[in-house]
Length: 170
Image 1 (cartoon, rainbow, N blue to C red):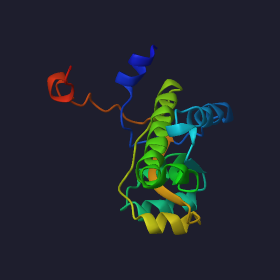
Image 2 (image 1 turned 180 degrees about the vertical axis):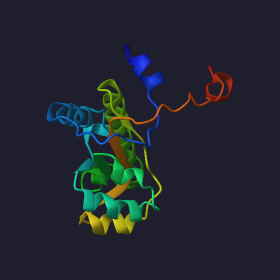
Image 3 (image 1 turned 90 degrees about the vertical axis):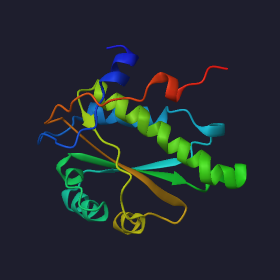
Image 4 (image 1 turned 120 degrees about the horizontal axis):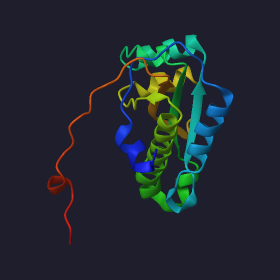
């Protein structure tokens, strides 16, 4: 697949087969995160790879009962790392750290799809509960949960906004 085919083919997956992800694929997912672009090369992100079923069940509760978080063999929690953002002040903290997590997750999701895995971006969760479940220190802020596994569904192609509504050529 070309990169554009991967981008266009990836879908949000919420139903997963009960199949573990091989270690060599986990390493590729980690590389995808580590090699993501970063604002000022600060790399102000940190990720928790959650395989433990009991922990994932707790994350389900914190994420407004989105059960697919526990049914995926792996759920990843992406966090902004505020320690690293101090160089750029408030903009670094409130924007660059979020950008760093977001671009890392994009790399992660595209790599997962390339490897035959499905994923979904979860932003709806009670942040303080996630912080407590994973014992996340104060300098990290949970920004997203990404369940990953082998798809057990084939979602239809979602519509996209027209190019003229998304792009202005100047």
